[in-house]
Length: 151
Image (cartoon, rainbow, N blue to C red; front, side, top):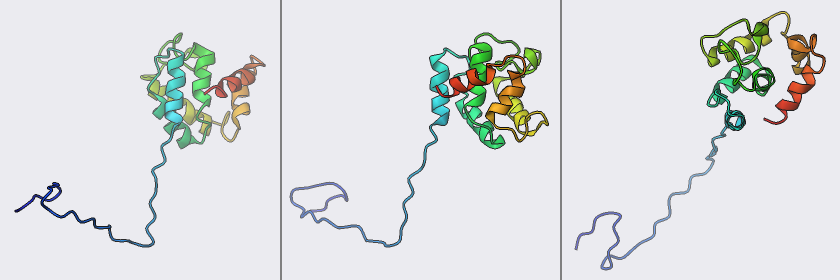
């Protein structure tokens, strides 16, 4: 009697074969970055039209070495996470006079400015927030930082 490989048949003796042992193999478990999901879930909890941009926020923040929670938090303080904004500017950049072609363009532009302009470059999160709007509204840095803790 002939049996197909991998199909059990009562007339065929079943033999268990152990796989060969190989030493010195390192198995790496892929690391899943949960930050984009955390941003997206947080944005969704605020009914934000920017839900789904978590990956963009994280990629651009990492690229410019800025805290990944900063810009989403600014968006909540400035525009209820994009619900009350204009010109795809959910962050109040340039007193909301500047427009962007898309949310992603705005994210990339502002984070690039935070890392390279002489006003913001080399500053920590609290200093960035001070110069962003803290000179006008003294409680602004603390308000945004409190939102960052929620993300």
